[in-house]
Image (cartoon, rainbow, N blue to C red; front, side, top):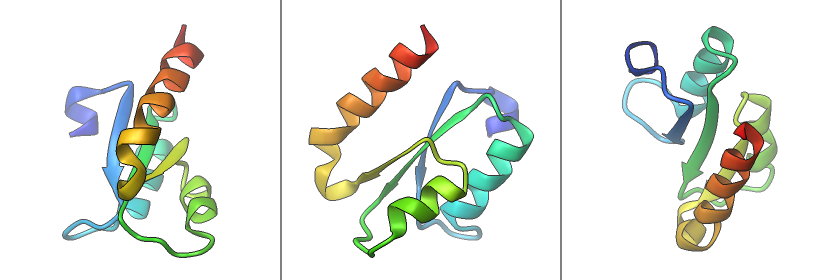
Length: 82
């Protein structure tokens, strides 16, 4: 889908069928380095934020904090692209 739609920003779930969100994030960032990826997850594991950043994600939001954090993440993204 990233190749077909070529979005500026991808919201990626960490747990998916087939490939993990980390694998897909790494692939997207390798093939399309200009695309930003924000990982969204319900997992609460220590160190997960760092693992997501290592995969190429520009940010990380827990589903439990989605309403509070996603607007700021999106605003930060838009400001960085201005």
